[in-house]
Image (cartoon, rainbow, N blue to C red; front, top):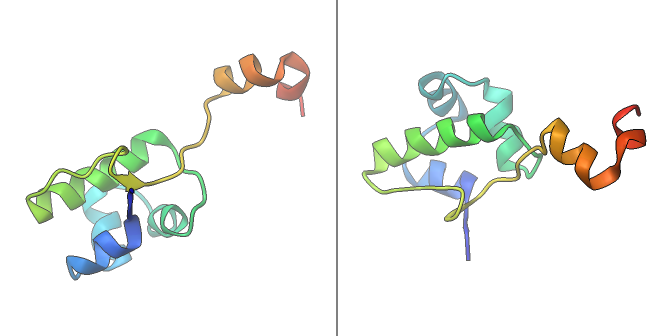
Amino acid sequence: MKQNLQEVRKERGLTLDDVASVAGVSRTTVYLAEIGVAIEKGDAEKILAVLSHIAGKQYTLDTVCVLLKQNEERRKSIHGPAFSRL
């Protein structure tokens, strides 16, 4: 079972601002990831890299639950060209 991102952050005694500033993402991005809103894969990887560095333990998309936004090309292939015009 994957770990919860918020729990991982709090176990390390970090605030949203701590993680966001070191990762180079907005506080909102970290918060959205924690509440289950899809974020960009690159942002998720930055957040997990910060947590990994601080914890001395490897956190990845395979071990921590973070929803990812689908890129535009994937949406087109799944839903066809009409969907991309919405």
